[in-house]
Length: 226
Image 1 (cartoon, rainbow, N blue to C red):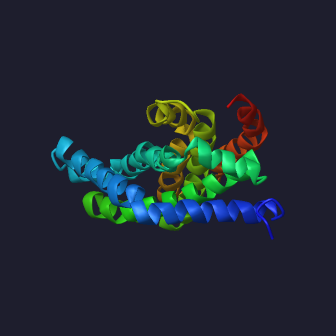
Image 2 (cartoon, rainbow, N blue to C red; image 1 turned 90 degrees about the vertical axis):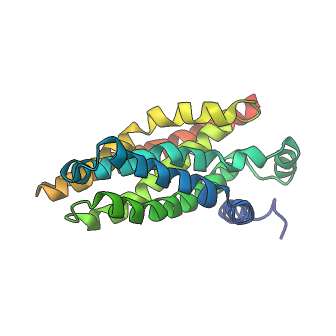
């Protein structure tokens, strides 16, 4: 079966697998960006002079802030190695822009989930957060990774061919991803105070769905512009 005859989902999985294999060889996301994220988490206790109560209160918010800022770099790391020749081959093979974006978003989601899991023990050791409501973090991890993955893939498609894409990308993704940051930090806080975390979880789900619909509807027009 040729690439053009393969179902779109199969093509997307193949592209995601290709991106993940490249990441395994390069190790840029998890071996370079993740340590910088851990260093950012380490600097916060130094800034507040190891005020334990304050660190426990601010720890979850600082964790998600680092995930947001450094996670954007994770989503844009693969676009730096994509060449016009590779894109031309995919187009000739019949791989559409939506399939390419879906494959990139899948790979981004896996890497972001790994990035979050690597930073989580560092945050626990440094901040000793209140463990109340931690089961709610499991869906939040997946949803935040999915939301950032889709936003990063969309911005990657928007900035394709631009010399400053790695600089422009974070500036475009970070403001749009603010609802993810608010929702992620509020879910556990609500659970710790005995409140229902559902409204904040619904906010995160809504952001992910809107980002996915926006990406699916816009990517074909972005293809015509590049």
